Length: 80
Image 1 (spheres, helix red, strand yellow):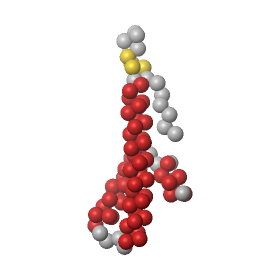
Image 2: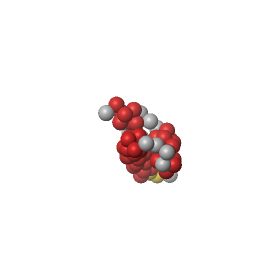
Image 3: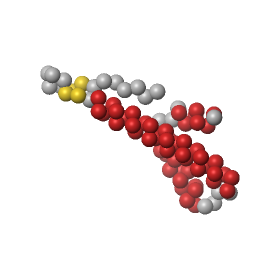
């Protein structure tokens, strides 16, 4: 599971960039079958990671509120 743990440490942008690279490799059809399966599996983990990061960002945006004084305040979201 070391591969999944290293994905957990990636930023959204890093994970998305790697996912795009993997998609390109798979679309080219140049990778052998076993490598394609491994790439697909890592891509699925990266996709889930990106979706989780997007959900966290969505929740953070939802927490942004207009304060009674008319200013904008936000509550920090955890990105663990």
